[in-house]
Length: 356
Ligand code: NAD
Image (tube, rainbow, N blue to C red):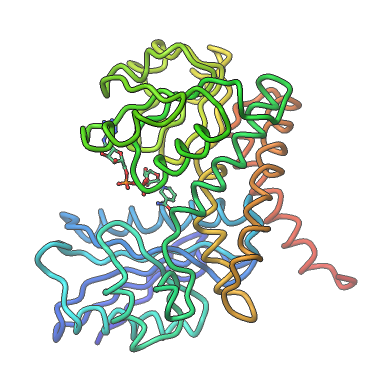
């Protein structure tokens, strides 16, 4: 097993992991541990080059620092990537080898599920290190994060309706939900029960058939979701859906959903602002899953009650982001980064202060 440390400016520790015996080629990037040990998922992807994998790991690790900081998880940010095809190249030996490299961080980095990784792989990693989260509930772990992500989005929507319409009540408004998978379905069900009007779109006809029967729910073709005249557009499927083509079509007052990387480019946050559409930054409103997992890393082990309480804070975090954006006349996306940086600076100065 070969571990090569890469000196990367602004990152706590980045290593390249090679294990010819198992065929493992991976990278582990810890961005920042000011607020606590780093937490971030493991992704398996067939990157074309090691440089491509490194760029992705660095970007994702930094994103985790910001997400955890705004959500007040008390953790730092990190991420790991395995270079390989998740459909054909998984083996117990490969993931046990990954587990040994994670163990070598001595608790500075804890891993979890991400693209291409399931519970089985996490269980193999667990054979070599305890620094892995998101295993089954039966094993005392935090389990499937999706219901917690959905809960966090629904909580966040209250801050959004308050900002847009001056009330934190969710009923009486019209939501257009794109994607009814693990997260979107739960949000749609909740909003329907509350008495909201919900337009849904999904590329899977079976899902549409199942949800169209709910009270107040109506379906449109996948591409028509951008044109729905509604109060809040709730993206819960793909990334990059807020772009030059879709933003001019939106007929909503706010965009707030679970999907990761909703803005195709940073400038699209400004484009939304110009159209007077309130944007709930994705990494703030979709933090419920990571907050749930973070409880597992804390002392005393996983506790659902504590997780649910912490997820309530997504409302406060979004309010802070909206206030910052309004007061400083900047986009909500920039405001979210500012809030994260402020938390990190405060923690650094407390640490540096002899009286702290
Ligand atoms: P999922 O794969 O279970 O669901 C995605 C749904 O979107 C599916 O029903 C799919 O058919 C539908 N879809 C795909 N393309 C579509 C299109 N063009 N138009 C309409 N519908 C389309 O995923 P999920 O776990 O529900 O996650 C949804 C989003 O939220 C993803 O972007 C994910 O990265 C993000 N997210 C999820 C979690 C979590 O805890 N699951 C946490 C944070 C962020």
